[in-house]
Length: 435
Ligand SMILES: [Zn+2]
Image (cartoon, rainbow, N blue to C red):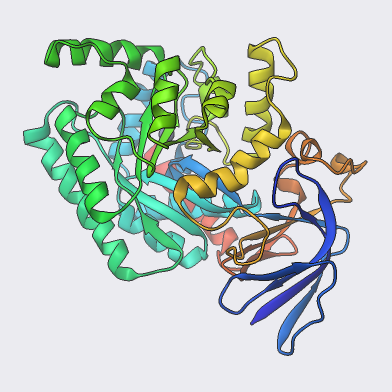
């Protein structure tokens, strides 16, 4: 059944963003069929009164590890290496398929409540993640995260086979909501051979390549040393990726904090996208701030992600948009360094472009991924009709209704596709079992 949503203040299709009262017609096929000041309802169409609400495209979480929701709060306030070695890796070793399915479902509940309708995920036991996503009705790009720690012959080949098999299985399923990507984990955890083969596989299967890069200073030092030793030429992380053929218009590079000026220009030349993850970078104390204005000036497509809940500790993209903007302002001693518009674009249109999915805008022909927020909440009054009103003040508590692909996932703050109470109970038990 299609829907006519009327009376809402609808976000404009372009920045500088503003809201105006419009009707939105959603087709049976899950597309936005029309957006106009007044639309007469076609027959057999559900009518939704959205007065008092604002209507946005669903937010796009461009980088996460959904099932890490079960590691929320584990080893908080420890140094990065201690946190990884003592708390994260031993628990990840104990995660089986069932645990990943439960953790992914918990993340899905949180993401829908945060107005996210599409996310880019990298983790393991991805068949289990895909089952959870399928049940939820969310849109996702899923990929198996490959790590060989320099051992391509012994480990990398097997990792590549798992990733390829999963990607091909997802393609065969032909689910309009779930696609896959090729995910070599990071520049310092993958051998040059694994990166080269990943790039070939992504090209062969016509899929995005999703990877962590330039996240920390240590990674930069490690990659400079590794490349000098192996090829006699010291390369920085993004240069190293390019030398392995990993940078293309289908590449989503997460973090990009320690990118040099020439690496920013290299990403622009290759038309690659950045998934900026400010909250995770701040919490793990990477010490820098991604050169966001430089990326924007060079023409790099910018998207934004929460990263996993282990390092965030939430999947709240409103918070990431605000934290990213204010981090940049503070880091540069310049309140005008970035604009709320830039961050709202990253959370919507930029994320959609990075993933190659026609969502992220309220316009005719776009996928019907739609979020309604209660504009009368105290934290949103007065209404100033600009991007800052949303980026600096809105949060998941304001999200009332969420639609993906023309189907409601949440109505009146109640989740319709996920049994939230049961999921919370099993997630707590699964986390307790992980220790
Ligand atoms: Zn990550």
